[in-house]
Amino acid sequence: MNTLPIYLGYKYFRSKKGAFASFTSLMAIAGLSLGVAALVIVLSVMNGFEKELQTRVLGVVPQLVIRSDNNIDNYDQLISDISNSADVIGVSPYIETQGLMSAKNRSRGIFLTGIKPEIESNMSILPEFLIDGSMKSLTSKNGIIIGAWLSRYLGVGVGETVSITTTNLRSSILGTFPRTITLEVTGIFELKAELDQSLVLIHHDLAANIINLEPKSTQGIRVKTNDLFAANSIGFQLLTQSIFDNNDYYFTSWQQTHGTLFQAIKLEKRLISLMLFLIITVAAFNILSTIVMTVKTKEKEIAILKTMGCSKYQLTLIFINLGFIIAFTGILLGLIIGLIVTPNIDELINFIENFSNRSLMDSYFINYFPYEFRLTQLVYICLSVLAMSLIFSYFPAARAAKLKPVTILRHE
Image (tube, rainbow, N blue to C red; front, top):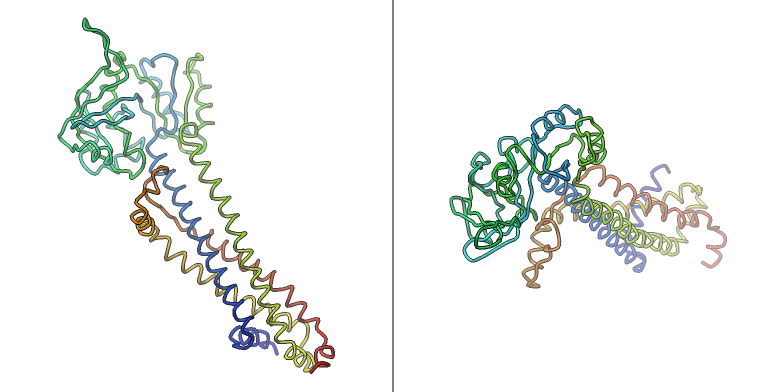
């Protein structure tokens, strides 16, 4: 009798009698499968967006920049003192200004960034994503590194020249007009992110010359921290040091420039998870309906089992086992569908874009669907859905155990 609940639960699952009960079983499995698959796909894609934000975007944009109301002179001493902090793993001078890049009768607004190419590998992941040229090609006189998207848009490659018009004004006897310089493209990077469209790099000294800074002066001090999410607190700690002996200094962090995007992804992930769990809850209700209908069609067998000495506990386990089989089947199918569809979601999006003749990714910070499977997350999804299904299975199973054989067989 110990294996009876397992055997009968499996038998009732395979039973061809009671067409309506069988139909509701299939609907319960289908509902759970779609719900679990949707949850796996959406959460994996949201994990991918979160990871891409931390690596490709936050790995390039400054984590922390210390600025001043005035130009920062003799920045070497400041950099040396900041480097002594235990929370800092990289420091460099930093200049950023806006401009207009032109080539072959096309133009594009850009963020012109001045860096020290020899230490850029310690400050960002950008050198790892160079597809042509090298950081060493940037000099204090010439050289510019642009994104792959911008390169294709302007139709220029390594060795060709581009014109950059900055917001800095230049005065002459002919009047005042924006300053324009011509630089040679010496490198191309590809992050497959929005930064490919607007970020361009030049040597720090060249950038200082463009915005009319004195030698050994800079616009800001770029700091790379050992804890990305503690950038604000580290910034406050640095400003309390004696090296910043006046109130002219302040800082900006990635949480101010890109933090809203990161928070939006986390909030969307929570809301979408809640919505999909509600859908799965509705699917789990189908398990309850299935077991109720199965109990109704198997009342005679239940009465016979009770007269043969089957306990209430065993009868309850029979129908809980039926619910377990339905839930396990639905979860397994949903997990398999999710694991297969997620890596191929880009192809699905491309098909929809080609079919509808419109781009679906223009409003996002990257132009593709990243994904990341997290084992703990998958286990949590499966166990929580299984637990919810077993809870819904218990109530009709317990009711079946309370049926009285005399009442059932009286009408036979």
